[in-house]
Length: 124
Image 1 (cartoon, helix red, strand yellow):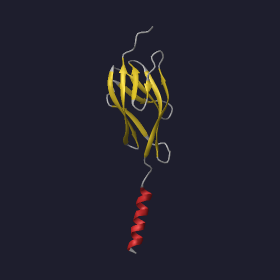
Image 2 (spheres, one colour; image 1 turned 180 degrees about the horizontal axis):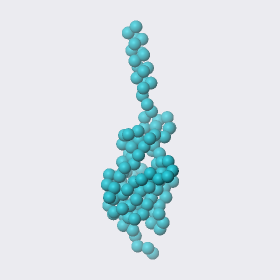
Image 3 (cartoon, one colour; image 1 turned 90 degrees about the vertical axis):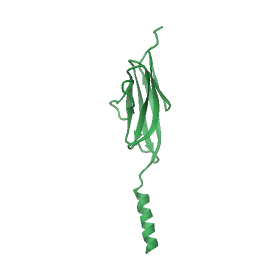
Image 4 (cartoon, helix red, strand yellow; image 1 turned 120 degrees about the vertical axis):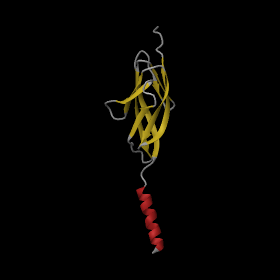
């Protein structure tokens, strides 16, 4: 009986475990002409006064999309907002400088990306 209880407890514990974070995909990056920016796993670059958008999705180990969010650590430098389409985000360059953007999946920080807002270059 004792062995049966231990097996049952193990089975319940394994069944209670949810899917874990696996990876994040960043695609469909678009900048504002004539000064496009970029979004990658390491860096977000956007000129001041401009916007860059990207499709960002975090997946669990069952390859299912997870509930997620993005937050600028200094919204005076770069502002991050969800846009009309699911998992599409806009990065607005407000003031030249650097900050971090945290990506959360299922309520946990899974990625921190450095965001750099640059001065606009002179037009040719």
